[in-house]
Image (cartoon, rainbow over all chains, first blue to last red):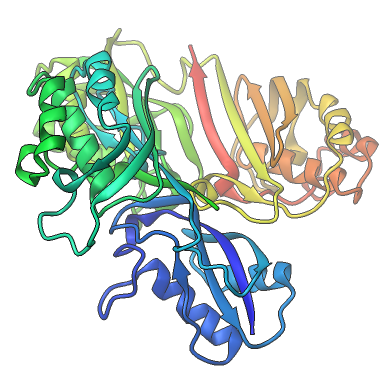
Length: 244
Length: 244
């Protein structure tokens, strides 16, 4: 059995997220279908992060074990030939048996795009959250800075989170503004469910003047989901990269 | 009656081109439907260029006359609210009665994108033609340069073209290479049917070494469609702008 590591991109618009579901097309489901067909048996695909429905990936990482002997480049082309064009395997390489895309991950980076112009152009609407109105970016930056570091992020995940441990280390939270777009890049050693989207939704409330920067710090300390803002929509979010 | 000029963007993937058809969804058809609904009568929409099925636009221009009195910004929002998100009206402004988006146009600019990496990423596949292989860009530049200027472009349009006059003035033909992409930008006072795609298809043959740069000049002079190369696929083509 050979362990393979692959880097995957997808437009999540038409998928019910990463994880295999009984009903509904998922990215893991599509990859499992194709790899099982190619390896003539059921192949389990391990993903680095379970992106939610509608979330995209520029650099999702997954691994799987194959019984047949494959040339990595040819295998990549064979997989792509059997996938819709909104999922692409960028590259595949052999990995040591102990490599696990999820447990071996050191850091994940996400980007959230907020489009602030009056009209969303048809080439990007799938990938941005449209917020038509003024956002005070410097207040958002100030509010966001308190989240950097090692904290219990219970306030920024679902109330009934299955994760045992809610402590994560946020290593980066960069907010930048282009003419029509605000981009929020966050990196951490791991993310809780809805964590990025809840951080973004809370920061948007700050940007709108609906809450103070100090209230973000208070929400964090409270460890209480009801003190943070709403989750921002899925379609603005992209998993940019996973570092090992 | 007020004449309005509007700038429109669309992802042409899911449309049978610009022009209204008896069967099949078209961009002009969608705009006609929405404007007729808003103006309570049949509205005729005049487009600057009839893009073919699958061709995109970043800056298509159209005009129409409205009987009701509309605020331009509100009208734009009302139109967009009734269109699918793959067509957007970027802006609308009042125009003098004699303005006609097609006849008043001085120059049109198109871009053709050729993607040369092994894998096409899922965020751009709708907008690029995938050509996996080596293309000699400097030969393409040399071959393309002979097309600049005022010529009879009969060899670069459909054999049974309805246009009476096949003489056009090509003011620009720029070929540039990025890491994974070759971009061909052409501008002219007007384009014949399939003209950009036939120019690109012919230049791709030059890039592949299947024809010489000199043969492009010969094809042009022959005024014979059979001497040019095949038309490149529609999805790589975008109408970038129309100048007045």
